[in-house]
Image (cartoon, rainbow, N blue to C red; front, side, top):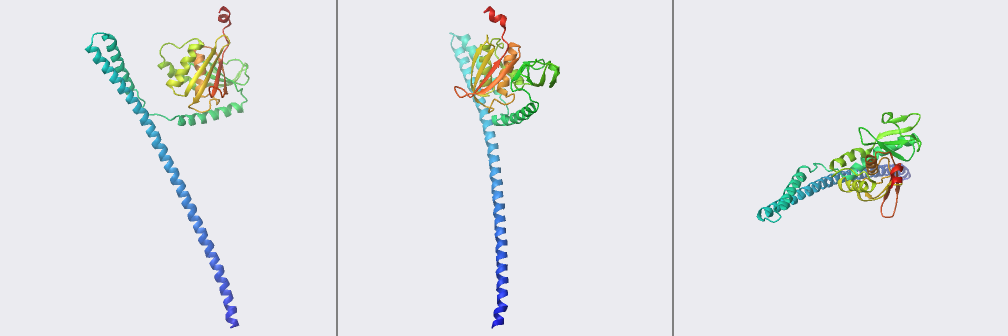
Length: 308
C-alpha cells in the first residue's frame, strides 16, 4: 500500500505541473489571438475611416461642381427671360437685351470655367505646414530676425527677405537666396503670396489701387471672395504713418503667425505692388473683433505728407 502511495505521488505532481504548463500555453495562445483580433479590428477601422474620408472629399467636390452648375443654369434662365421680355416689349428693350446677353455670357463662363478638382482646405494647410516648419527651422538655425520684410521684385511682383538684423539694408535681388553681403545677411526667397497676387490681378476689375484705403478693400475682397482664405477681413489705414492693419477672422489655413503664411504674404505682396516700397510685416493674435491682426508698415512719403 505504501509503495502504491509513494509511486502515485510523483505521478500526481507531474500531472499537476503539466496541467499548469498547458494552462499557461493555452492562455498565451488566447492572449495572442485576442491581440491579433485587436490589430485586425484596428486595421479595419482605419480602412473604414480612410474610405469615409475619400467619400467625403468626393461628395464635397461634387457639391462644389453642382453649385457652379446651378449658378450657370440660373444665369441662363435670367438671360433667356430678359431676352424674351426685351423682344416682346418696346420699353427698355435695349436694357433687357443687354441684361439677357450678360446673363447668357455669365452662364457660359461659369459652366466651362468650373474647376474639375476641388482641394479641401485642410489638405493645402498640411502641405503648407510642412514647408513652413522647414523654412522656419532654417531661419531659426541661422539666427534671423523675427520681423519679415517684403521687397519689390522683377520676375515676381515681390520677394520675402528675412534679415539677420532688423535694420539691415535691402539686398539686391541677385544676392539671394542666401544673402552674405557686407551690408546685409539673411534669406531672400520667393514670397508665397506672389503667385496668389498674380492670379488676383488677372481677376481684378480695374486697376490696382495706389492708396492704402481702397487697396485694403481690394486685397480683403480677394482673400475672402476669390481665394476664400478667410471668412472676414477688416482694414484700418494710416497713410501718413505708413501703416495698413488687417484684422483676419477664421483663417482657412490655420494660424497665420507661421513663416510666410499665404494670407499674410498675399497682403504684404499686395501693398508692395501698390506702393513699390519695402514692407515690414508684424502678426499678432487678438481676441476682440478678429482672430489675427496683420500690420504692414512702410516708409511714408514725407513730401506728400507735408503737402497735405
